[in-house]
Each structure stands twice: as C-alpha cells, then as structure tokens.
Amino acid sequence: MSGLEELKGYARVGSHGFVKTCLWLRKSLRNEGVCYKEKFYGIRSHRCIQMTPLGYCNNFCVYCWRPAEMMESPDRWDPPETICEESIEAQRKLISGFKGSGKTDLKKFAEAMDPKHVAISLTGEPTFYPFLPTLIEEYRKRGMTTFLVTNGTNPGMVERVNPTQLYVSLSSYSREMYMRIQRPSRDQWRRFIETLKIMREKDCRTVLRMTLGKGFNMFHPEKYSELIRMASPDFVEVKAYMHLGYSRRRLDKSAMPSHMEIAEFSQELSKFSGYRIVDESEPSRVVLLER
Image (cartoon, helix red, strand yellow):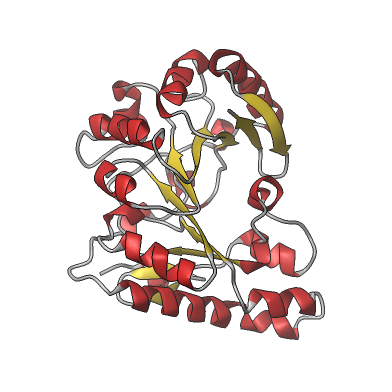
C-alpha cells in the first residue's frame, strides 16, 4: 500500500496510518527547546503525537518535505478505534528508548508516555479518511486535544469535523498559482475556496498556515489578505519553507526565506489583512498573526 514504513522513524498504525516522532518532541525530552505550537497554543511538545490516518495525498506541493511520491490510496479502511489505540501505543514504543539516555528529563519522559495532544498532520491528506470525525472523538474521549491540518480540498469533511484546532494550508492566492505550487491531481481550486468559506463558520479554533518560499509564492500580501478575510480565521501563521526532506528534489536551498524576511512579509500582510502580529518563533521561522 505504501513505502512509508520503509523509511526511518515511521511506525505503521493499522493498515494505512502512521506515527512519527518529531524533532521538537525529542528536543523537549532533553530540555533543548520546544515546538512553536507550545509557545503559541500551549501544546506540550513531549506529550504530542504526530500522526496521520492515511499516507495518501491528492496534492503534490513543491515545498512539501514529506515523501509524496511514495503515497498510495488504501483499498480498505480501518476503524477509528484501531487507529486511535494503535497510534498511542506506537508513540510509546517510539519514545521508549529515550528512558535510557542520560540527557532525558525523566519527569518529562513519564509524561510523554501519557500523550495529551494529537497533531493529525504527519503526511497525506487526513480528511479523506471517511471516519475522521469519529477518530477525533475517540481522542477526545481519552482527554486528548486534536490539531487537524488539511489542504482544504475536501470541504464536506471540513464541515463535519470538530477538532480542538483546525489548520488549513494557504500557500497560493490564485488558481494559476495553486496549480503550479500545489500541483493537485485535478483542479481543486473551487473546493479550496469553499473550504475557506466554511472555515469562518467553524466553532473550533481556526488557523490559516502560510508556507512561503522565495521565488514561488512569497509576494502580493494584499492578494493573500483577500482570502484571509474570506476565511476569517482566529490566527494566521506565516512560516518559511524549509529546505528539508523530499522538497530538496524540487526546490533549491535559495528558496528558503530567513526569519527576517518572513517577519517583513508578515508586517505587510498585517497592514492589508487587519490582523496584528502577536508572536514569533525564530528557530522555526514563523510569525503568528491574530484577528
């Protein structure tokens, strides 16, 4: 079904889901730093599961550092209870080796074995998992918060789900740019716009995440602002493209903006959108704007 399990660090969940520990979880366990999500939203990095219910994605974004080329759509669906339980167990197994390290904070390690947050964002497009609302509810039953990241091409599912926080990726301001940057399997621009309109009606916390790179989508903040006003999210994250993973096969390192360049673009975006800059994380090259 997928070659993801052959890659280092990916643990299979059921027949089509995956878990992978992130850099910031490992750093947090060693008291070497935390993810910007902890700084912005209070997510404890060492207690967060990074997972996906499926590895398949219908877009092939040029800036994506995940192995999109290795993804395939599953031929059957696992029940959400299975994915929920197995993702928690996979996380525990993946971090078990940290207990023996002299650099590990053992209090944090004990907390990490009882995860409280789930970032449904590892790879693929999770909204194509048909039981996603129930999966989110399964995590909620266990006292866990859920942070769902979507490319916005499945508006019907976006309307149905109710995570703690909903992220929608915004990296193009026109259909022409969308086709060139997101490289969808078919034209999804209208469906993406529909998702932005649905987003403004959601009851959960909402965030537009902008991944920007020099030379391909880091211009015309006034045009992005039109879409931001359409979606009316609680927050906007302006984040630099990072020259990592499989994106290195598609983009040159020169496409990676500095934090200063991201901050300057964010200031212009603030002027046009009316959103105010409230925080930033220089190590992650991200700036947070609030409505």
